[in-house]
View: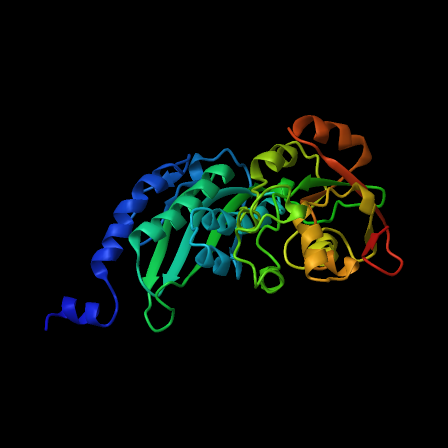
Amino acid sequence: MTEKNAYAQSGVDVEAGYEVVERIKKHVARTERVGVMGALGGFGGMFDLTQLDVKEPVLISGTDGVGTKLMLAIKYDKHDTIGQDCVAMCVNDIIAAGAEPLYFLDYIATGKNEPAKLEQVVAGVAEGCVQAGCGLIGGETAEMPGMYGPDDYDLAGFAVGVAEKSQIIDGSKVAEGDVLLGLASSGIHSNGYSLVRRVFADYTGDEILPELEGKPLQAVLLEPTRIYVKAVLPLVKEGLVNGIAHITGGGFIENVPRMFADDLAAEIEEATIPVLPIFKALETYGQIKHEEMFEIFNMGIGLMLAVSPDKVARVKELVDEEVYELGRIIKKENQSVVIK
């Protein structure tokens, strides 16, 4: 028995791994940007910081996965958007600190290496990188039979961005009276899917629920997470934003207070939130308490900004979409988030 055959008999297909690398090269090429060095396949991804026009660079990094939304991608056999979710969860976090994403690395672990399927996953990662303006400079695919079932895979990523030291957004500038502005989400994004899957456990995904305005359920559930980098980065560069909250797991209640000091609170007018149909469906079909929805989901707002009142008009001018005025920053009395 040769060593190559021995490995194959253990469930690891080395040739399939080589095929994946060849398949993904064209997708990686789409993500080229200033600073990217080297070629795919090295032992480490390289990025040249000297190519950037940043006087006092501070590197800001973020890492995340997609959670159990992956289980729906596997269930529906649709893998071309889940990679964007992975990128979004990382780059939206670092833009919340004022960083421009520079590069991204992904990690895919699977029970059986299926090159065509993994190419779809990486194509989604590349699309996310293109939307975020960052290079896909490396990654890893690990075939681990016994750890994962033959149809299973997991996906995680790591992003690095750079901020001018003077432009870092850490919440220290948020003040009483700041206006809370929201940018719409594309859907559920990538949080709360353990509950989502329970609510819709008996559905095939082909159903068109009356609340979903003609879209099949699976299309709505797999709608990729929106990437906010290109909308928000100009605001950061111009010094228009005091605080940014990426609304992920924990919804409004957990994430909004992360962008301001403990003695402040966010007062939000519920009527101003553009609640998406899927959240109404989840609340109805899952019999979820209305107030609990704001503790789990983004409810239609994926990113929230704290902006000085005199800068609101300029923010709206620069952002090429509707910006929702949600409320304001107040002195904290009891709760950190007050939804009226």
